[in-house]
Image (tube, rainbow, N blue to C red; front, top):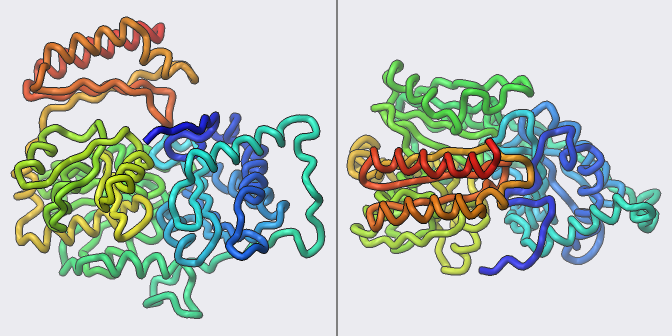
Length: 466
């Protein structure tokens, strides 16, 4: 699908940057809130209703309050959800009939970063066209005289309602329960009973730290919880799905049956089997696809060739989209499919939720394993994984595309691909969320893959002036 709208601030997953530096400042968040309130058009008219949630970063409160100020200044009603996984905001936006949802989170990025993500009334990410419209309003507000909007005064000024904290003892979403319980009930409705299974979860000191431990305990797991004590500075630091090796070591040493690790905003998850092997998004796609009887799914250019061959042998076609869950989502919609995802553990089950949800992904995968009557280890033994080397080259901000398109880099990629022929792949792409150029080489011969990855990486570094 062609993407025509040009966006300056929005990337593949909202606006991101270093908190305190443009655009991730209170001023920008204020203007973004105002622009969202001006852009959202409630069904039936009236004042828009917007939900706001955040992860555990210290800068989250600054940015969330600034966005709330902008929204209410333009007449929107805000429901403040506090610290909650990103998919919880998506789910509740749709479930509550709100007009939009806003999440302050940089997901798996380092704690010094932050981000602003938006959902429409269906709990889906905004289209490029709407994001471009919001950006244009934000830009005008930064110009002299550009913020001369109609005055909003008196009862037309918006309000803020604070959601009650999640009540772990409540069974549903009754009148006396927090609205957050509706999200938890949704997760429980799609979860297997874990029958005393020995499980260890890593909450990445992020947004899952309140809900995930209670959720897995309710499901009967004999549970150990790691990294559920956020300080505002320790989200994703040597923990979570960006550091699965930490949990893998803990699983082996503690004799656990499975480990589950989330990223900072819990929209993705990885599993660890009893042998300490990382169960990637590719593995989980294969396991759930066969359990659900899917004949086709959508993965990304990064998904392992071994998983694609395994699925093909079992009658399931893997379609590939560009990296980024929004591109997977678009391809699923285009093809009329429901299952897709990324190697990182960001999976989409569109018959269950409108966006990726790490807790839902983990629970549906464990349910599929139980339904199969096979162990997770048996699945891991069965699904082949080709050697795949990933390297990240940090470049100057704004130079990602230029470096990736440099003639010497293009030549290195072409030469590596020619050497691999049909036995592997080379993928070079600018990151959509960080100032990085990512190099991926995959093939049946591990030594060749490592050598070619190093060659391409050196070409990228040279082009970047490193």
